[in-house]
Image (cartoon, rainbow, N blue to C red):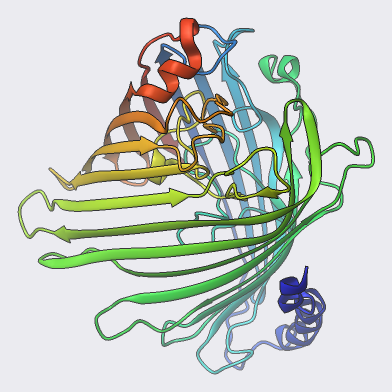
Length: 461
């Protein structure tokens, strides 16, 4: 891919930069503190989920899940080096053969993070902060739409590789990384339902290379960032029919955070070019020209009142495939992004994803008391392309005769920090009023409008 030449030197440059910068790490500045420090802690989250009128086909009409996530964190800090480890245990209870289960719900007893980080403060510029990590890790990038550690998913995605993060005193930030995605295991339904243990492995012949840069804040406190990601995935040696991908993703984001009596806004367009694969009619085709994009835009106002309300109007559009029979694919690939903060809960729900979607919504956030937060969101959800699939359920009408109207989603959430940084309770409910597309595509198997509920208790120690 010609455009990918912009990233061809990134991997070798990052390796050379690591070698050069590490030389600076061996010599601590005069007066540096020599004491070491060891921390140990953990987080335990128990979340109950239920859904009535499951919209996914071939599953029970109603479903429930007790999602258990326990994380143990180890951190050893030396004057210039830090060793960090995280043991994560993600399990699903109360589900059965008719339940929805996936590798984002179950990943038993896994070393989610295990890396060494070098403190490189001042190595490239006086007063700068810089860290180089190498090993197994999780990663958040920007607003987290294409690369993130999901806050809601019971078993988040992980990577192995190197990540360099540099920050200047004026607010500039530069980041470069080379990662191999980890594959959560087991991946078969029986193993997931039984919470079987299997050590995760890195995805063979797949790499993610990226560069991120953030400018200093503008006078009006707006922030601008730009990023470039190269995903290179080759066919599996065990299964040559597995989809390949060679995608260059270019994105930019400008935003201003809410402040009382001020307008807030955010705009993030993302372009995607390259080659990918697609399955249609039981046939997988590789080497398809990939040409897709995504855009998010929102505007709002933060009121100066007792409950600190922030009202937002939000719009998201991710392209879908226009013609499933041609040699092109226009379906946006959300890579490793998080969607909960924008489209609602995932796990056994996950009705909306960042692909083939056209959504307009209104969101209201409130803080009734210092330890209470609430959110209400109403959205009109449609397909971007009538002939492409609705990714949330897998339904598809290749003729396009069912239209694009998925329906209207209403979501509400309440969070109570009972003990600051120690104990919190979160409860949410989401209802989807289905429109023409789900009703006509499902036909006689249509089960009605789904309602999803969850409540989570999180303890930090």
